[in-house]
Image 1: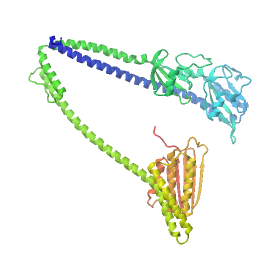
Image 2: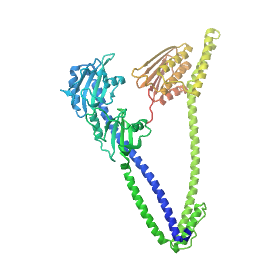
Image 3: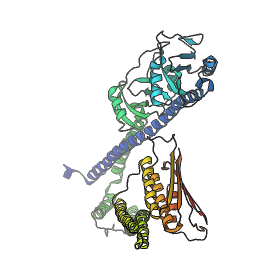
Image 4: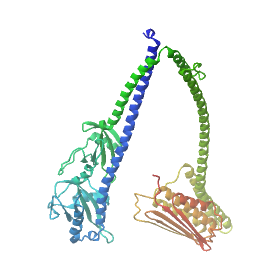
Length: 599
């Protein structure tokens, strides 16, 4: 059938088929690209909405926490002066009448002192059951368990059957040993929390839901919840499971009878999940409009192209066109010497000249780019080699410092023990035996230090263990010269065992102490050394003083040991202060409890 068609018809079909294939491919790529960018824009939009909503909820809860903590510090509250509770609590409630229901104090003796407004209150005093005991209420138990401010799960109030939440904080007496006085609570109706969501105006028909840790809907923009409901509706368990797994911050799913994109995050103040639902059809509507317009334009362009080809593909253009097509095919097949034969002065002659010039330019650019790629590749390899060399140098310096501070310290002890043994070999046999035993012990310790440096670091995760190990090390090493050692260590009670100092800080403190002892043994000629270590909530202070000969640290050239000490302290974000005179030397080290991390 194709052999019966004229060249113009076949040329037209070929051109139209090629253009149609390109347009279809372009449409497919455009469809994928537009949808991808649309989803990315929607994800950014969703994250912005979630952040704003999260901020409002967090601000709401933070204000409740600030109020509870500030009231808990009032002297009349800590002293349990119940005669002043009414004026203090009620004034705060009335000032915050827009969202605060009540403030109360449940004592450890079972007393309940509550003042508020709204349903369930008569003259601002609640009507409670006769057997009411605040110590059995969820807010009381949760606050005692956390020993800190908490936001309770939604529950029914005892004075009126309506859902709400409570911000509660334990209250302790001001006098030591600060016994528990009770728990102070601040009540918020869920309806007031829902108003935070309902006041949001979300574009693209989006709606927000707030879900607790058990999968119950606390507040939602999809339906107006009953103000006085006694139970919370359950969120779709399958979708809630996907949110809890946290595989992705956004995903597409069927919800409320429509396909929607669900984006979620966790509110840090409450632990509740915040979910934003956007209808998929609304999200993709702008992209679909663009695609429909592009499709119409493509059909129109194909029609115009067909008409143009039929007009321009006459006998006067077929031959030059075939020649150009032949040349293009040869060039496409790898014949870069292919050129269109010129000679005519008409438009095809000009086109042939331009085509030949373009091919030459492309060829020149290709060769230039290949040369630049080769040059960049060589530069990249050189840079990679330099980086490898610098990393090797850095690792060698680290190993050298560790060997200097650990193996060097042990070798110093061996040297000192050998000197003592040599000086005592004629007068004191027991002393020689003791020094020989110390040489053996230090040699074994040096081998152990070398093994730890090469194969892995020792355990520096426990502050008490490191302090004990440090104290043993100082006593053991300074006993060579029979130096009197006094070590004092104290740990602030606010530094909890569950949140210990960073292991790198403890290792730095230990390594600096090793080097300080080495300096005392080698240079100080001291007979008394005092070490004071104080671990506070933010920093660790270590001060080491001796009554040795001292030195002028402004004129004496520092050795590797002092430089290592100062380098280690600064590397952890700390500092070192050195004072020395004829009466001895004092070294003060300050290290942070926590290491700063990059955000």
